[in-house]
Image 1 (tube, rainbow, N blue to C red):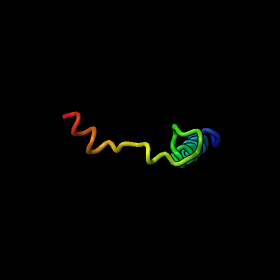
Image 2 (image 1 turned 90 degrees about the vertical axis):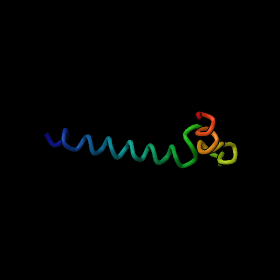
Image 3 (image 1 turned 135 degrees about the vertical axis):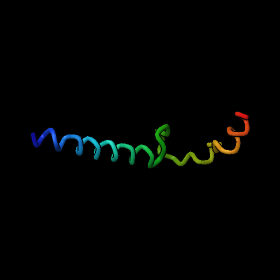
Image 4 (image 1 turned 30 degrees about the horizontal axis):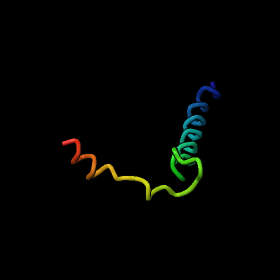
Length: 51
């Protein structure tokens, strides 16, 4: 019973740590370099394009 109670908390903690490491440099950036200069912000470019 204790294992079934503790397991969701352990999984949640692992998922949060995983997301933290993914968003540290970007999930689609295997080099680890800062790629902010290559990105186009969604707003206003794509919101205006959708209209």
